[in-house]
Length: 202
DNA sequence: GCTCCGATGCTCT
DNA sequence: GAGCATCGGAGCC
Image (cartoon, rainbow, N blue to C red):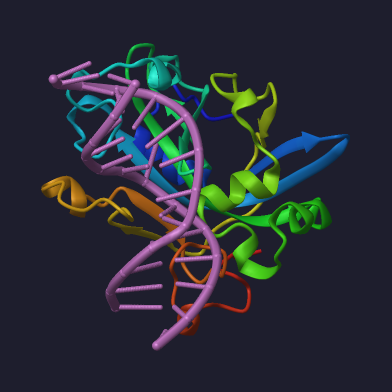
């Protein structure tokens, strides 16, 4: 299991790649392999909700100890983050995309679509997994589970700038996004760069 | 009470 | 590749 409190956030983001996240809805387990993550670096990161020491009701979970779930609602969509670092330290890793594994039929029903479109975006995967604001501030392992081991090994992890962060100075270009090269479920990838083994070495 | 706006996604060109 | 739909929280009046 990852030590979310003592491991640097940027390292957590890379360690999460290849792990399996699961959530149970009505007795049906839905799970997927994490393939795309982004870091948000707390008070100093202009793109982070915790920037400048701001602290409001809806971001309270971000200030919990590492290992908690921070959910953010935007335009009716839910985005999921794993909180990192010690308490009162608003850093976290957003899960940007997963590769469906179990409960795919349920995901298709929830999303009303199939293929990469099922989970290749932060709001898409929460909808596919059936995650709701009920899990806000819960501890990882409570309603949302993460595999202890890393069953899938990425051949190459691409390190690049984050998506949807304009006009944030150096933070717009900071290499805080990590994803599996060649995996079709990553956000915003070119078709020509996909690999037949989806980027895994096993 | 009201306005502004975003860590998005979908649709159409 | 660009434009827009559309919801709730934050912050200010």
